[in-house]
Length: 168
Length: 288
Image 1 (tube, rainbow over the protein chains, first blue to last red):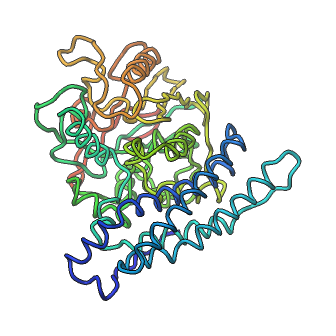
Image 2: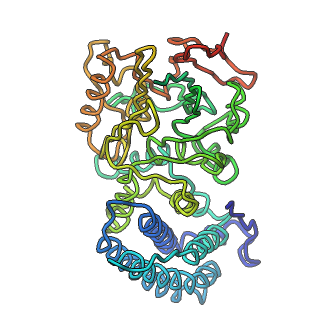
């Protein structure tokens, strides 16, 4: 399924300086949200098809994503009063919790010995929705533009920065 | 017994890529042209791709602008140069999950994808590390993982664990864990009728020098970019060399611009290269 980007910012974020400020204020929260969605996707994926994946490992990962969602909710709630991107990010939190719950059900029911096979289509739909929501929230912002891409080239950038920071 | 024709198909390129990123330690030695390619393998019965490039619908434009990737062409256009359509592809082997190898899965609606399980399990593991390790995750985005999840949901994702003999007839996979990425793999094509053997290296060999040495002295030099270890890259290189009886030209680096001068090739109307590595009996050349 191809997800569409909403190419429209809130009315109070139409000016470049405001966009830059609002998005740079949410760097950590943005990274956290990305990690949560990646984590949920990976748990779903490995739960479905991996042979070597152990339920305890996946449950451990799911506990981690649960902690991150709680952290994210706390952080964006603090900023929602003055940062409209944070308000939009806050609106994604309920779906993240729902995904968490669906994946927990999936792990308990389908991976336990003798358990029924549970097909978590709802979890996948929720992950898609969250991914769409995150991208739509940060479309046209410096953060949104900066995160694109898993790439070798992207790694180069990180590597170069790390070399500069740690190797002088 | 099965024989495959092999073509390396360029779909975009970076005109100026730092040499130090393709050859470990080549600092302050300027840039080179870095072609972005995938590989098509075709037998009488099967059409297989090794990697699928990336798409231009989501992040392609951003990538192109930020990293200098130019002249991107879609798989339908690129594959047409060798008479194949994306829907003809039966299997796709993903050497690793970087965007320029795994970013275009939706263009191949009938293909089953084969990738190392470790590539995903270690992704998940790296996500759970503290923030100071986040460099490991810099190359990931939710879209990559989600696309893989979509493939799994449609029953078209096969996770493999280490080496696999005859993943499809005549093609073996070899895991290279913790090398270029957590779960890279390379592909060994065993053309049995013609007793002809080729290795498709993915990003375990970027350019010729990674295997031949900088002065053609045979001293392996790892690629410049790795989240695993240089030692594992060297060990993978040795393994590839053993598979081709130490005939290094049989280890195909897809990011090597000079490949088109080493094998028969031609340039398309779009200015991209089609390189013909080998032809199975009865198959006609696509470059002459």
